[in-house]
Amino acid sequence: MSGTARVGDASTAAEALEPLARMGVVRSEDIVSAEPLSGGVSSDIWLIRTDDIALVLKRPRRKLKVEADWQAPLDRGASEAAWLEYVSSAVPGSCPRVLGYDEESFAIALEYLDPARHSNWKSDLLAGRVDPAFAGAVGRDLGRIHSASARAPELAFQFDHPDLFESLRVEPYLVRTAAAVPEAREALESIIGTLRVTRVALVHGDVSPKNILAGQHPVFLDAECATWSDPAFDAAFCLTHLTLKQIHLPQHAAALRASAQEFAGAYQAEIDWEEPADVAARVARILPALMLARVEGASPAEYLNPAARDIVRAVALDALATDRPIEDLINQRQGAVHG
Image (cartoon, rainbow, N blue to C red; front, top):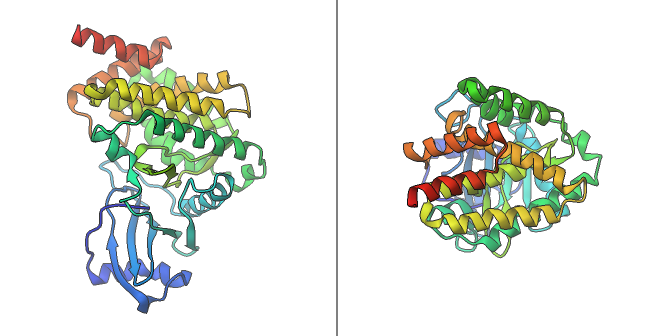
């Protein structure tokens, strides 16, 4: 994992190191520094250094660091550790190695990936460094994870966490948005109902560019929502961010649109657990729901200004009401602006 560090005080560091001591990954007397990392809202994350190694300690928070009252079970740390262990074997290199896990605090020790060689994909995109080929690699590897897991039905029991998916995704994103936007309630309730009963493969639940490192290949982070559910949700979640950024960064819209297309094409090429067209149809339906959630739900996209939020709201509502493709609606709107 990687991030921007700042020095923490001794008392806070001592508290953070308690799970690490129980894991036995490093000896406390060998620790040279313990620094909190910024960027996450659901966990406290520390960079731990000794003379020989650097590692990341991640400990889930019960109340997430957002304005809304958003709480989640702490034992999601166990689900994340299990996802990381499985994916490390299914698609080697696509996530950090787990160095230790503490059952008492649900904290995980992970290998540290140097930002000099693993940039954050969200930071790259917001800075205008848009590489459609990398987006295609993300879609390919996500599809491979879903495909491998769909052939391992024993995972359905291991990741039987509908309550986790409900508290971290369905309720804060979709249920709250349905309550806030009455004109979209019927469409959103239909999508919510489908998500609650579709159980096909191992779902990461937070495939956002902020949780993907860009190096020689994609590295997926932060699988706290890992659940046996609908793989279309993961694909739609990632496409949501690529689509929002088309609106936020109109000067890079063409490259971001190409990135979304590369992602979708590479992902669909890996679908072998059901008809690709069926997955694509669910992705297309979930996408505008998640876009609307990013302006009306518990976790708004912080980089959108008021004008961009208005556009997101308008195109998402239009897509939910008419089933028109989001890409067509955005192209139409941006064409009207520049025409």
